[in-house]
Length: 399
Image (cartoon, rainbow, N blue to C red; front, side, top):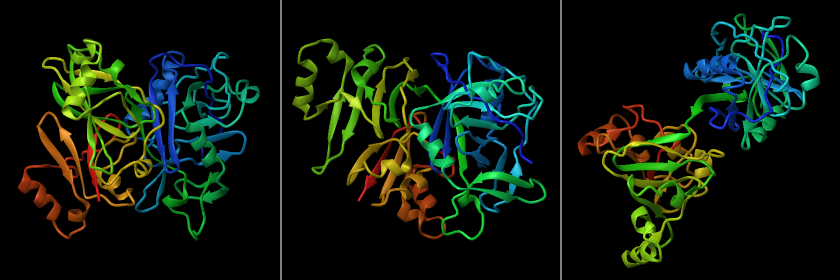
């Protein structure tokens, strides 16, 4: 049986540099800002499951309209469709506080009835203001985070799915209130469940090595170049490829030239046939040249994630510098582009080599793709388990 009780979420603002976790579901991304300082033990417990990939391939198993959406308890093998309980760590001490109430959009840990210190892996999102209920039972339900961005739209979409009582076999038993999309289906598989593909801590910074870095903005929060890269001691130049029907053009920024004021930067750019780079927008990649001995992290704002599907609407014919905010393989990125992809490339600064992927070569039998990569001394996305995601940029060529 699933764990009795409900989860508790916090509606107050978290710390300024709060940890943010990205929950990648089949219906979209849910970003959760954690209350690291206000509920340290609960946050540490939750992150223990995240960092050990315990929430990957789980599903929301309990949905109560106007109340809560609960997950973290059960996983499903997407090949065999076998459901199993998530292995749990030791229970965490209850950290309920009246200053963190169970309001809509807050996130909390589920626990056993009449046992305040029994929360393990299961968590829930409050779909409504549940303060009068959850703040006053079983020691109060500990709110340890809140959904941010457009995450509640995704939560609400999952909560609108029809719910069923499902018997998942002897190991798990019968679960009540399971949200399912049964349209056109005669049996329950992973495809019918509200699955969570991956949960990961969203970095607030990207690492930039000395020399050339191919980075990206995988969110809808634009990067203002003049403020992000104003340090002329550290940053040499920033470049973005502006794709277009005429073949495209480079947009360029130099903090040294910008610091001289006037029209020096714009005059230089015009003289070279460049545009002046002002912002790096959603789904765009960029080249950053970092000065010697100036490697380190760069704080990069993030908003709602650019997915492989939303990238599909912005790519143009020809070469594009792109980025996504969720985690996906090169093959998955290419497969999501309805107009097709000729090739995809990602730069590895440490090895000064290109990762390469081509769907047409991959579609051929045997080792055609890997043999081609080897012959060109490229790097193999698949062989090195190289994912694409937050902060990374890549070239993609569209027919």
